[in-house]
Length: 472
Figure 1 (cartoon, rainbow, N blue to C red):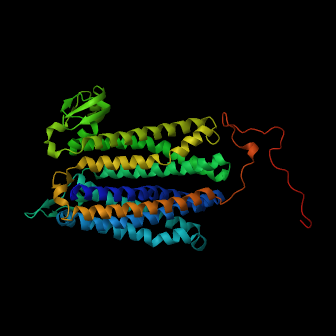
Figure 2 (cartoon, rainbow, N blue to C red; figure 1 turned 30 degrees about the vertical axis):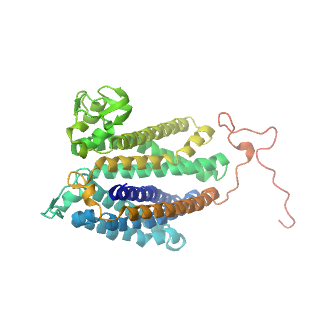
Figure 3 (spheres, one colour; figure 1 turned 180 degrees about the vertical axis):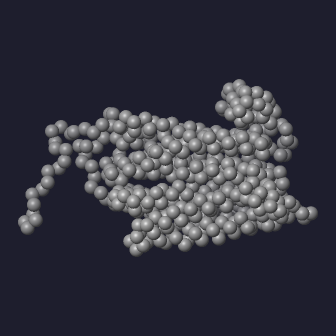
């Protein structure tokens, strides 16, 4: 592999690993702020216990996210000198705004959030939690503004040397794809975080520990996903229509559509053959792609053959990544609806098979986010700035061996970091929200059949209170 491919692989690996942590911290920061507010307004200890528990997970995740994010700044300078030279006048200020607003806001108040609960009072702690949560959203806003400009550049012009200069900062930031991509990413982060909360809560419900706290968190998470998963589908539709208008080649790769077609079919599964410029083993539903992309039964959708082969992305990568994202989205939607049905029947907390399902959803949001980013970034190729700067012209003149060796170092270092995170996170999760609350008596735990509580023979439901010790 040449230096261009290796540089892409290295950046894809580091950003793919990094994005796991902000995805969780974006959602958890808002969840912790909600719990802090509920603790302040209601005074119920269960909200305090949950807040303290999820603060530990948030702090651990936040730290790993900061460490892994710093690496990418250096990679842009070492591996992507052509990119830095060409667009630094446009993207440099956006990264600076992210540091001056979001990062400073988080850094200024995260100490109060983590260590100030017993020192500043409930109201100030809630304010700190809201400011940290706002900082995560501000950070997302600036990063998505920069990345969206690379997808749909606007408000800047290139001089004779190929260096871009901003002429309208409003157009640079609020570029054509920015609102849709920001909403889509924030919603994905909230959904991922909600299913992580639901999974951990289901784990404790199945063990019969931390019952009140786990029920409360599980209920909040399932309400959240019931609202957000359908919302994400609507946002995805809006995002898809925006991509059709501004990046039709990417959309054609997502759909596996080679010829510009009216009444384009929805391709459920196929193997896109780039050399033959057709799909093999295709399973299609006529007209449906035109219906959801153009909202017209016979709407026209541009195909891949509308551009030269050199301007097309790697179609199989984009095609399958998009289907992984959509497929997981449908699974999560079905889980949310099933939870709502069980809630209506009064069986949300003690249906053991559903608790197992909820536990299994923990990694699915992450996989969907990675698949979505793969679709977005691989679908933009061969451009690093869509239609303006080719990836081959953006890479630095670095030897392929140097890029390959540092990639191996990153893989090894990140593997150690991931193992350390999972080890510490496992300890926090097993301890639970109340840090060792008395477990539910085994006789009252959910039964193996319908999930209803059972009584073990004639044994008493609760253990008899021991005789008082002398002097009690």
